[in-house]
Amino acid sequence: MSKDYKALAGEVDARAALPQPGALPGRPARPRLVPPKDVPTRSPFTPAGRAALLHAIAHIEFNAINLAWDAVQRFRGMPPAFYADWTRVAEDEARHFVLLDTRLRELGHRYGDFDAHDGLWEMARKTAHDCLARMALVPRVLEARGLDVTPAMIARLRAGGDAVTADILEVILREEVAHVAIGSRWFAWCCERAGLAPQPTFIALLREHASGAVRGPFNRAARAAAGFGADEMAALDALDASVLRARPV
Image (cartoon, rainbow, N blue to C red):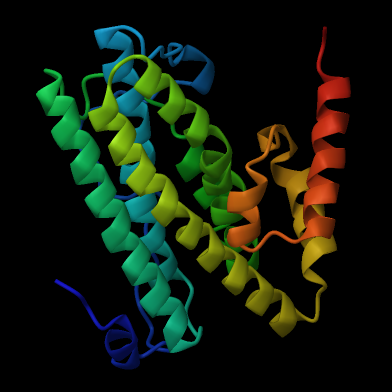
């Protein structure tokens, strides 16, 4: 059912005093959360590997639901459109999670069957104090990373004969471009409010908090559609090259 998010946002009192969200959102008892290095590599060419890959993506979508609602509750005093945008994102992410969990069940598994890591929520904790930093580092870094890697996952799934899962990821990729674009729009708005230039501010935040998350090759078409300009992409290319040079051989 289509929802009028603008009308819904018009009913939000953006300056109302609300309890601040807790350090952790509500979560099921599983999956077990482990350091990222302890999450096993996932290959789509075996049934177990395909299920583990699906589970990893479902875990991202589950966290993205909480991140969207966290932005709605945490960052007060924003324009009504901000709350409309992130409410719509929360609904999209919930739908993505259901698609992935349903597919997992068709493969004989369910969400919680595999270990996962807490990288997305760790960045949420780092940016809880500042809407500008949140918009820069969660949608425009961590979620934008999905724009880069998902096309290759889709290709591998199709090569492995799993068109059903590949079709689900096609839907998610298309809609995630819009979600990253929402992050770009509100990052630019926050920069304007603070009197800051967006591109150097973004790169400075990236260098400070998440330089290791910048890894090419980049999905340039998707990033352009999501609000990344040519100068910004050139800066990301330079940062990617510097990170590569710093890695041990």
